[in-house]
Each structure stands twice: as C-alpha cells, then as structure tokens.
Length: 60
Image 1 (spheres, rainbow, N blue to C red):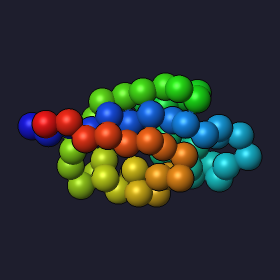
Image 2: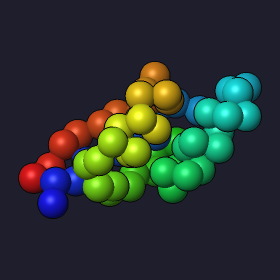
Image 3: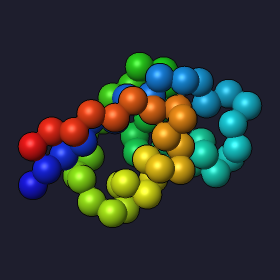
Image 4: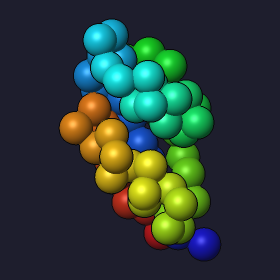
C-alpha cells in the first residue's frame, strides 16, 4: 500500500481549534514532527484542510 510522509513546517499557534485537532489526529504536535500515513481518502482530506502548514511527500 502506498504511504505519504507528512511534516509540520509551520506553527500551530494562533490557528483554528479545528486545524489544531486535525494536526493532532495526524500525529503532529510541533514544528519538525514527521509521520507516515496511508495514502487514502481520509488522510488526503486531512492534509487538504491544513495543507498550508504541511510538507507532503509521497512514497510507494
């Protein structure tokens, strides 16, 4: 199954509570945190909602 690497590159300070919760759901707490998630519709939706805070790279 394909996966995507997600890295938090901007701070969560001052962001909407909804966006902070989404980052937490992805396992991202502070700048520089990285997580590997499955490449599916649910993960893509989370990434789309807070994409301005993230750096995403795809793996196979």
